[in-house]
Length: 627
Ligand SMILES: Nc1ncnc2c1ncn2[C@@H]1O[C@H](COP(=O)(O)OP(=O)(O)OP(=O)(O)O)[C@@H](O)[C@H]1O
Ligand SMILES: [Mg+2]
Image 1: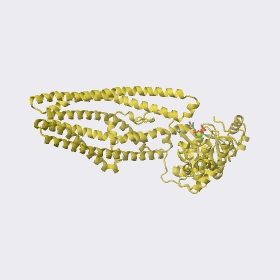
Image 2: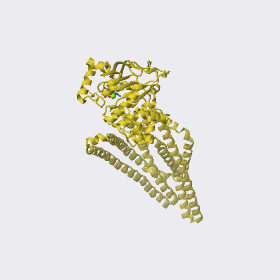
Image 3: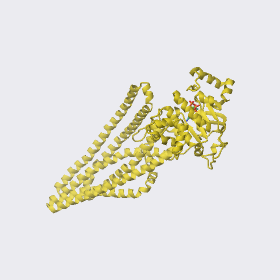
């Protein structure tokens, strides 16, 4: 349970997450970094641009199109101004016709430029997000056990989807807004100054006010946005947790309790978002008012110039349209700050994964494990997670073809031994050998290729029954798959499924029983044809038929392979060639069932207790009690 919790992002820390905050982002507080010059400098522009490699041409095309579309926006007010001048002053119909046609042409060019810009930018953004996702996914699944122990899977999924999407928005949303906003502003100012410097000055009289409002309210909004994201992440993490544990929620009839808890969290989110809405609304209203106040000033001042005969109605019209465009530019640019901050946090979270290193070292010159005698050995192995000593000079061996049962109370270190054998971690002291070769000197890939694992949960994938079995050997033939299913006592039930081997299983193999699931997992291990078998036996009780079938399947498997089984069932333990008893990280007894019973020690006690509690049912699900 602990493992599955760690890996599947169940209950635990809830913290920040990406844009839509679907799940917590444990530990990393990068998003809390304020938008300072430092964070802009640290922003990995270069690396992001590296992802544009094969779409640079498209980026250039889209930028050119953007410039063209900005120019058309600039030309429009100028033309209108001139047109009104000529129509009113000279009353020329020909001029009017020409004006209308020119405007039409300009709008058409603008529309085409917009289309090109928008399409090419989206293409660029989609390409970048695809490349980044490929890299992030590849990186995540090749990280080692310590990395995955430290990161919740929900958090990693969030980085893969939400954070990369935010990065995409840099290219599809922020860059174009920034460029067109700046181009528009600069172009507008140049044209306006040339037309009428005095009026330009008047127009910008309210700009300092706008800047102050943008800064003051902007800060407030930024804080509220952060708080909102936090709370959204918490709300989503809470929902995910409940969905994942729904069977427990239901069996404790805690639906009402969870509903209330969720409603409380939602209420907090609502409050924050409403405050955010109030400030946003005020922000837009005040900035728009100030911008239009500038326009009112222009009307007043320009009107006087017209009356005095120093300016024309055409110029005023041009200025008014520019005024509206500028007001809109301000609005867009001010919203960029918040977006940039978000993207900056996302990029750090994404690149943190891309920069992560495995901490379990791989050998430079790995040894081969081909053609070894299939023996396993632990020789004085000590291991700790952090500071906690979990295995203390553990020694035992499993000879070729032997089945050794590993028995001991909960927390004794059994699963840790199984992990170490797969080279998920390296021991602090001592040697773990496969066929007499120290696995520290072999690559983890090679070690795992030689080992088949059937774990407690027997995880399956969404997909066909056939694909799930073939997972053990991707190029397995139909004959191999069916042979494995037969050996695993799974062929009969598979044949009865609606589509036989082609039956689609749901998420994590939903749609079959616990015993059937285990037999599929066993078939998968058989198909792999590895010399070693590691078995973390399920403690959950199966019904008698399933139990007998699973046992039969396991016997088949164990008879051919060198097996280490973390055993809970009396049948498995008693039939093992030898039993290794583990307690608090130390091997305290070792021997056959008969010898250990005769010795009357720890194992004999454990065994006696099991029989007292469950009665003696050799072919049933009586299990060693978990202390
Ligand atoms: N990733 C981890 N980080 C820190 N401590 C861990 C980790 N995994 C296990 N431990 C600790 O190591 C000890 C041994 O755990 P292990 O999972 O090997 O026990 P086990 O014998 O398999 O128990 P069970 O029968 O309950 O499965 C326990 O004290 C546990 O708390
Ligand atoms: Mg365990």
